Length: 299
Image 1 (tube, rainbow, N blue to C red):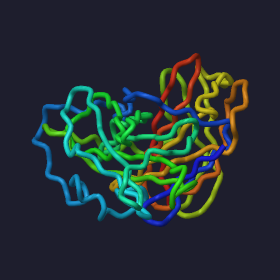
Image 2: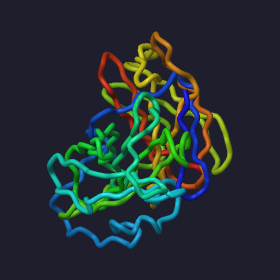
Image 3: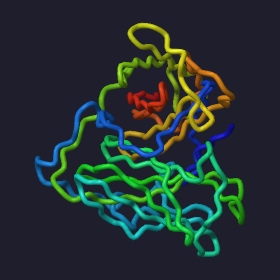
Image 4: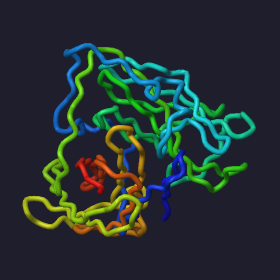
């Protein structure tokens, strides 16, 4: 089972999980992922965005996953804005070095494309598996978005051409018009709650250095041992860096070959940049997907 985080600016960000590991959301916005509060559509006027946040300017952005192009592959989209407060489809195409839309992708964790949406204050996390038309146009069905600047990440592996077998993470920003209320990032913490489950994190990763990280899942004070296989793994972990939304996909080392997992999920952690990272851990029990979020400080 493999899952590598490839980035647009050179430094690799990998958090390997010796989990029994990695569920992933197939279709949803994650209620409660707005740092525990929901952003309001009625506050002060939406602030202006820097050039790095302007749709169409992403090719100049630096940092992991923060570019719309790499090694001749380019992410394009006709959608520079999406309406607030309702479901919307984000359309995009990945073109190859020959300028033509790529239509052949190798499955990663059983899916040909993983798509992530995150607002600039790291709220509103959504992880979606979009659908592709015959001409190479993808459509990601997003749940309701709140006003502000959002970054749309695509994670994929071409199955032919110059990029065959290579993992790519490309992204673009969009604007969601309306009044914007930014939510402060919660302070770093060792535990998070999700649907009655408690996830406790132990470990102190250092920027650019590998180190151990362990997550323990409990419910009502008791160890959880019924984590279900999902997309060939037991938990799916994604991280975004505070300030620039730098992306790190934190992948499992162990396949789920049947049976249940938990309560302890062991990670081999390496994050390239110091500062706060917002981690989103997705796992499944009883056929239901759960998402927990917490802030991790990397020194």
